Length: 199
Length: 390
Image (cartoon, rainbow over the protein chains, first blue to last red):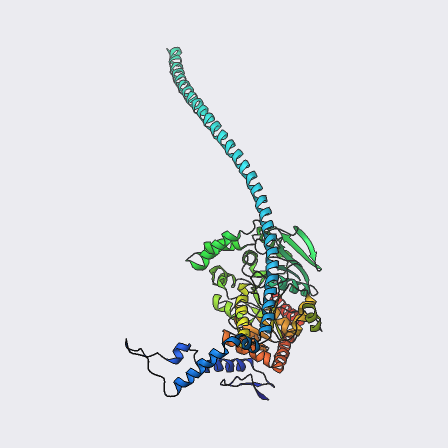
């Protein structure tokens, strides 16, 4: 069964088959309806470009009868001016608007209260976290300082030990050189001694 | 058969996303085979800081083995790395650095999977974008199933994941749109897989009047369920909704349910109700004219399924292909891409209770065909048995 729905004047109707509702079809109709609408134009565009009068030329006079009507309108507006607020009060739904505004303000107030409380809580939390982190950073810094001192002492000791080792190395090398010469001399002596009994 | 579910976080406190999806599937499948959850000690998804105790515990009858997060996430550093890999020319090393910063960095979990691969028949990994899935699937590709829960966001463009989607033994998709997207990105059509999704447990009956009287709501109202966040399209929803009210003078109200990280405009017809219990939530859904889903990125919207389970129509953001696809397949909701479409679709829904009723009934039928737990369980069983047989 087909039915037409939600059809503002000037818009293409949207038909819904209630026995077999097809979302793709409904959305296609919605898109077609939107596409069929004229592009929105501003008031200035709608009224077209205003003719530019040459400088010094006075405005055109109103057509016959128009001047009388506008004069009457001006007079009527002048007479009505003192009671205009009352007329506005009677015509516009001021009370409704007031209630609506109060509700908006009330809602905004509640949100403000909620956000203020949340903000306070967050600030408190952040503060305590920061304090805790600062404490941890201080401890870390002290440890790092101690480590640097220890590293400094260690490198100093290493330099001393390396110097000592170098000196010892030199002494050992000299000893080896002497021992090599001794060995050479003893070799020669051994050769000389071996020759003697043969003689 | 023994199956391990591997997920970034796990616990009763976590009530959304892939973690809840994983918990529900694990709890439903434990009646068919031995199930164990392998996860981290994290609770907070921003920092992954260790919260739960390490070791073996039990959650709703499911054994859960937790591993420590080696280093919490540093949001600022992560933001910098992410900005670089999303917007600048980069290499695989940068993407791996991004993955490490993304976390949760739990090498002990991967080590355990590698060492105990023979103790389990299958490992089901949830959420492709985290450390545990990437390295976990690489550790045991022949025994792994991946539930990507992928959305069309910039992370899907990272090249390391294109390779990942080709590696597991099978993939379990949430929707045909997600499958098409991953196939197109990684050309992994040869990897077996099925569109499964997740079930939901809706109450048999709800009491909308109880919700109305508890929150003082009269007349037609729309409901939004979920995190109130700009990333979820809420700012656009507020703009569209308030403009709709200005232009049409409609008395409809919008009830917002969930935790908020976005400033809600002060307006008497925007009702922020905070986080609600399950009973209150389903009461609210049952009484709503429609559920609004303004999200741009979804791999499967659980709240949409819940709305259909309660016979309520959905008004969804068509810029999210998954939501649009679900509405078209189910004939259970209308959708919008622009304000004009939002105005027309919402106008149609509000003006015609009969259309709402039929869309809701279509949604319920779709839910019963594809998303009851029996259907979900059978799909998992069929997939696991087919893999076991090969």
